[in-house]
Length: 452
Image 1 (tube, rainbow, N blue to C red):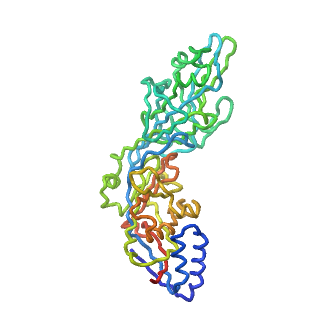
Image 2 (cartoon, one colour; image 1 turned 90 degrees about the vertical axis):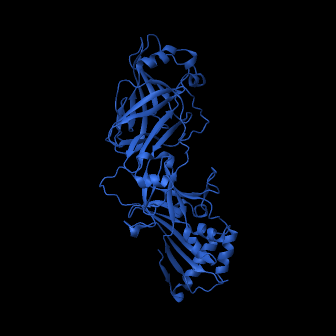
């Protein structure tokens, strides 16, 4: 699809000069673009062209593993998404002694043990209950190591949860805990017999003398979702909170109400291991993952939580081959596909971003030049809630593609910003959409011609 208008030169001559001068001021460090824009100052400003282009290729690919250790929120839970299939997240966590040389006193006895982890958001239906198991790690977590969404650590077989409770998340509801009103938190009762043997039984011993010995003795735990009601829910857990802890409530022969905390903080490590099962996704999504792109012109799929990213190509560039263009503005517009349900628990991401690689097999990624020059606010990617669209300014990037200073063979991707910390997802109207033609993926290209 292409729309082209030629504006009256007399009306726009002054405007174009101002635009060109602004481009020079914004791009002093880019020699190649500076040269071509400099030439445009000496050309006739008879014409300014605006093309609306939908000759764009957009399809979904599996995301690489993402760093999930020590991020601001970690995923925990399971969701059966009717479009994207199943996503499941387990949470690995290390805990430290809150004091050294622990002695629980004479005739110490546990009253209860509670694992508490605050959370500040969710994805899915919070009315759906989850069953969660807790297991002791048999493989250590290291404070200075990085852990990714595809990694898992070995654990012992015993489930440390007391009884058979189920859990629901209420992120907007504060809780009254130990005489104080606290942030919403998951509170899991743990097996008293296990902690009596492993902790009270080591009172005053080397294992509880300091954290070096303790972390060799008790390596941490993993929280695993082991069943869900309905479509399920994923919560955004905060292991950097002061309230993230394993608390032992006990008494001894001198005191009735005592407690000791094993804490998660800036000196510990933790990460989420995330699994996606796309065999239960809709057929159009499965086809794209199997490299069948026959239907991707209608809709494409993007998912956070180490799920899906979008590969973007611009076939329309071929129509400008052999022509010398000064690009004044290149705006890429993506729109969220319409949903039919009144309440949609599968939220769209607030911000997207873009990067390219010089080889799809390489791990290094590169910001687009417009992002580096303009910053994230003006580069774009934030959702416009008036029409649920996302806009990116790719002016410098498209100019460099046309000049050959960035290769069109370099893979270009759109991803959810901060994708490791959330489970949002998005269906995007494709460039050849029949159901929503007015919201097709498109680029609006504003340019002038430079004579030979």
